Length: 333
Ligand code: ATP
Ligand code: LTN
Image 1 (cartoon, rainbow, N blue to C red):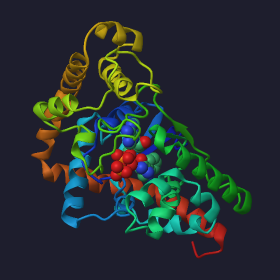
Image 2 (tube, helix red, strand yellow; image 1 turned 90 degrees about the vertical axis):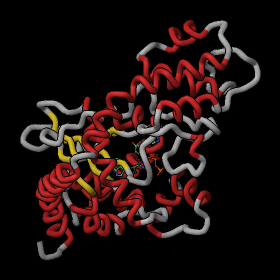
Image 3 (cartoon, protein in one colour; image 1 turned 30 degrees about the horizontal axis):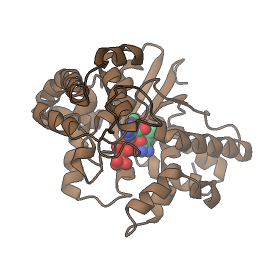
Image 4 (cartoon, protein in one colour; image 1 turned 180 degrees about the horizontal axis):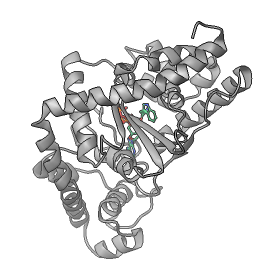
């Protein structure tokens, strides 16, 4: 809580262009959480992004573009604090302290670590292992009450809560214990090429994901190539028909229809109709965001002002927490 307002915090890595999975699982909920009784902090997590190799020029460009996209999705930088993680030095400071309150065993159980180490076997760095500790620092620095995330991040919210509870027990009541918040539909959009895997913006196969700024033609093409199955019936059954169910889930996320309505809409039709209908719904849903994104990318100075203002406001709040933590540790505060 800050001045009687609940604190909301979330982050997204500038590790590529956000996908429709990031959009329905996370980004589109961010503006909806803005309200009179809440203060939202939205962070471009570039320190997290370097746990995987990044080209500095591409990272710089993706960071700017992500700020523009957040605003295009409806985040209002006057009401919310939009900032870049590396601009607020307290993230690294708190992360170190929390590292010393986190067990190797806990971190070794994280499925994202196991996943990413198998995907990047040539670069299993210590940052990939301690990634959840930096994420806990992001959350705890702002005394966050609510953390909106997609399904894949729930385990990281749990470890953050465990770290905070342990720290409070050992050092006094310093951190607010946060709650995760996951949307009812679209919390886990799967890859179009491999419906057993979540859709990911850093997938080396661009046909696996549709990005928020893909052209209508690219979106049509990627959905046309989506993996389905061979029994030809449009029915929601994630276990036995993961590809078709993923398309239906995307369709309902973009149209607001219920699953029963979506099944009825495609009853008796072939998969071509489902793929086409889903692509159309996505294209329509993204249109206003893409238009606003293009407009904002023409105002680079404005985007830099947003980042500077966000960094200043975030730093004020973060510094207050680090001061209390340092004092509790016996450091000069
Ligand atoms: P990367 O591919 O680089 O690991 P990512 O696409 O998984 O990145 P993040 O930046 O790590 O995305 O996540 C930003 C937010 O989007 C998080 O809240 C995460 O839970 C959510 N998210 C990511 N992928 C999906 C998905 N496929 N479906 C729903 N939500 C998702
Ligand atoms: N790890 C997150 C991105 C992220 C985040 C955060 C989410 C970084 N810091 C703080 C919520 C709160 C991910 O989605 N991979």
